[in-house]
Length: 273
Image (cartoon, rainbow, N blue to C red):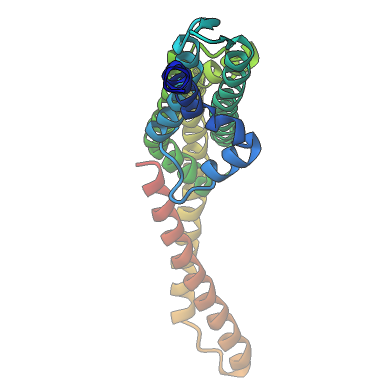
């Protein structure tokens, strides 16, 4: 009896080694991924990599636990099927987490591209008046900070995808192309921004010319007002007093309107610097 018990000791030790890794067989892939992704706060890249390493380690370690066939005193143990099964499940769990990183990267990349495209569309808009021109100039001034922020986001996405290199995970070509396409947008935006700045200068010159024409007409109008004011001072036609009052009120309204127009000219000139 003792000899038989002693003969089974190494067999049981081998079983124990496999049991320590066989926990993966009871892990549901979908449930594991959902629970991990829904962790609050959301898992960091380091936590992702740690979890992936856990399953990657099982897939590697199970191959080295023993020979495919182990010969003991009283029996022979074939471990090949067990190794294959455990390794296959561990790789399935590992790859599901890797796929989640790829899906998340794709979602982030699409969002980044959408924001870049919105920025490109905004700077392509042609201003039709001084206020729209001023708004476009303000947007252009803020765009550099916005592009730098998007570049930081792109770096984060690339870092997450690069973390998969450790596990020799194949990333689909379309996903790689999508990721690298985000690197091209700063140059695209710079090119469009340069064209927009040239257009702004051109529009600014045109609008300034139009403003000067309006100012010349306004100055002529002021001269006419001065003559009308002088005429109003000499109005003493008591027979037509009602008409005189009406003309003076009209003149006062016109002067008030001219004051507002002068203020408008000043505001518009500020836009042109």
